[in-house]
Image (tube, rainbow, N blue to C red):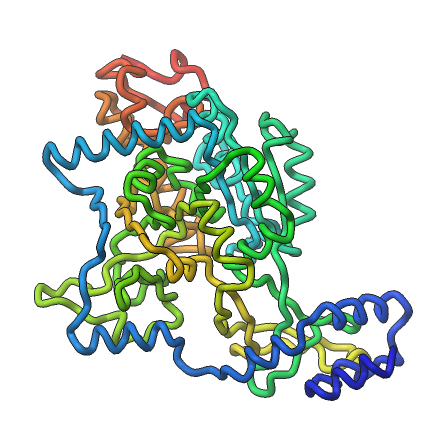
Length: 480
């Protein structure tokens, strides 16, 4: 190890990373040196100096709510809007969105950096068999939707998938094994987000995840911007004349992927960022809140929001901060280029992180409470740079069925159940009936919306057993 590197660690108070160095073999030593060299130590010092005080945006929102000055969201499109004007608005948006897809100027970005550890699934979430009857994985289901959207538009729909070091190799192998799910490999790009060192919450010292290995974590979904720049993908998109990016996270199988209405509202509203929201179930729900802060639409992460602010109510008892972030956004490519790769702020996230105390340690320390701080960027902080941040309300049961935990609300079980209920509503609206105990899944190849089902099934038909419309054959599954 060079004297310069040792002095740098001493200067930044991180020389503990050399404790037990002499116990390491050549391979682990080289890995450790590479990790140490890659860390922006000055940047880490700045993040640590910011301390653990209330997030400035959260503090400002708390002040606005407490003063009774909270304003309604501008540019808000309520999906539940009734009447001829709302219907015409949606039709115009859908037609505009279809034209955008037909022009080949849209791409999909799926953020897939997480493993399903909290679900008892130690593989990438994208490989989770989420669909209730077919057992299709998240990636399979999204690929089928992308194929169908592209076929209808008469143009291929590029798909960018952002992974993390924990999911990258498995995701790449799965896409190759599945032959990119029938998509042109030239239209599918799997790229990796960056990582940052994890520090002890009390001392700010970088942790070791194992002898010879610095503890690191992905830099958050806001790392997307830097990852796009690093991988040259903004230029790749520009070369393909793609100007609109539909963004979503991998753990919501109900997402209306590249939905024409949302794309159309984004374009017609001249927005740089469009965000889909749902009404929050409760003040305690783990959803970021969407609100107007000093004239701009902003999103405050639930973990940053004081409980009393999250629970504030209007005169009728409803939540003042009613709009919950679903992690579905539409971005203009030129807007992202203008923001730059390093513009988003870092947030402190407290986690339980197992670690070792030195390179000579033989046992892993497993804390029982949050002991570490990870630094993450949030993609929704891009709203701060947008002239127009459009907000589109969604129906929770139709478009937001996240898989976040092992059981209960927002679990794999609840998402599968919600999908079966959704498809049942589509079929019943078309005049069909679902037999007692039947389990009916609709593949994207067969229908993407309730409107698609109209005319595809005989009114009065009764669906029995377990069936996947679009993958199974109808005559064997439906009885008049």
